[in-house]
Image 1 (tube, rainbow, N blue to C red):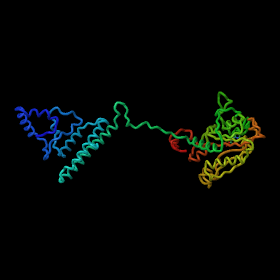
Image 2 (image 1 turned 60 degrees about the vertical axis):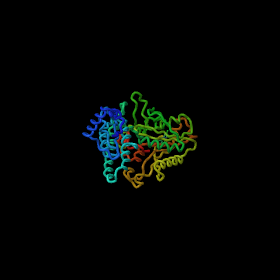
Image 3 (image 1 turned 135 degrees about the vertical axis):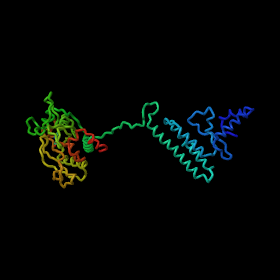
Image 4 (image 1 turned 90 degrees about the horizontal axis):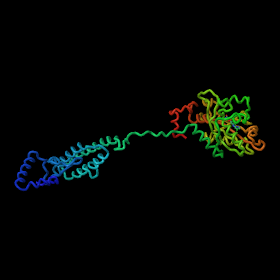
Length: 409
Ligand code: 2NL
């Protein structure tokens, strides 16, 4: 008998002498009692799969002997090996994959042996081999699932757990609108100026031609600092314009965005603080025509080229003449709706030529210089653009509201 196995090497020594003959007889009897599968004609034995185990130290290796080209027996033996294969981690998994499912793996090599199977058995053997392949793959898939949810060895960290989501956040709708407004005026050569929100009476009222006891102060009642009654929360960003004019650097072409305060009852339409952009252009020969054209350009950029404007005469203590500018209602195409109160027009800003008293209060020669100014709230156009019905939403920090502006511009 010829046996392909290095493990049998030692046994052959017993073949010589009487002891050897006796051993041979007992060995043949033991094989007779417990015969291995019959080898095909011309075939020998091969030793299969000791993977994942220590080589045997006794005769138990015999159960790994199977006839060469006995494809069915090999499949059975490999199946048992797969069942016993222990996959504890990603390293084991990869070793398993290479051994059984790799390009030079067992499944592929058994497939290659199909060519030696007699035609009559090909169909049945093909089916058997296919089942074996699925069996090997299923073990891989389920082990993969398990090891993927294991912690990565030694690190103590389970990389497969879902991470802490990185919230991207979003810009506040007021910031979005303020930025749009700034960008339009920057294209016309206006720069941006900033100033204090806590202001004194002179910069907020008196310099603006609103002396103490002026009736127009009633409409701009505000909050005073208890420890310092001379200080108040500004009612408009005009205080920044006053401070810029006082610097004496002319011409001035600036916009002043910022938060302002009024002592108002909070409701869906008004709040005790809101946001404003004021603008100021002072130079020699600035006219009301410059004012109209600048603001017309602005609203067409903001609301679209088809928007119409109209100016209505108005009164502000700090401008003369004064006007309010309306734009045609873009929600109903001027047909009349609840937002424009059936007028087809929306009031958007107040404006006028800077009152000579204001220029003089800031040390500017009103005979040489003229200028226009305007002021608008940011909340109103923002509510129009995004269809926001309640002004209080802007300051409640409700994420359900704020999240709706992710990616908005
Ligand atoms: C409105 C009206 C306006 C101004 C603000 C201004 C500032 C200086 C001088 C003259 Cl320093 N005027 N600002 C002018 C006209 C109107 O605001 O309804 N705002 C919400």
